[in-house]
Length: 257
Ligand SMILES: [Zn+2]
Image (cartoon, rainbow, N blue to C red; front, top):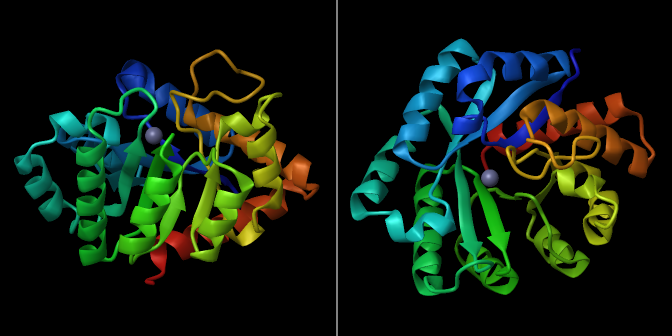
């Protein structure tokens, strides 16, 4: 059986990569990264990514409105989303969630947008990919109350206690380049302790570049470094980890609740 790495959250549809995308996708393939979830945050992203998928059929697509865009999202955008997420090329809803890190002005609006998108996901029975920053308790409360499909906590940066609470709800936990940073004590501990059957990996590129490329632009190929790092801290062979992550991916995205 072919073993490979999966990047469960990337923004390779970002402007950053547009001129040299073939080169980036080739490098990812050469690094053994043979599945990438492209996060689409607006209609233009999505249309571009649908086109890309014709060329790279192994990429998967998620669609959702990011909390930091809350003041730009119109009723029309929501109507568009409601329709388009029925499309079978869209395998998940996200990234959606709450972000109070830079701006708390739209807290109420963020919560409304979050709940509304969870309800849409419930309707089409598709899993949701969660962005949560400086909003741990509100994220937890809203998810617990509203989510009826599978849930993946993207780029998990909260405490061990919060992780335990999410695991109790059956959620999955994804880690990215941050775990490789020297000072990232909590993410490292969480990545070591999360049950193997609930673990996922991601790059969130162009952000969060892992060691040994920290400080440079991130790209989807580098999920390999995140994987190798986690295999090492958990003391398991990399190919065993790959098989487990492939199985998690299948279970999360393909099996109905
Ligand atoms: Zn993202």
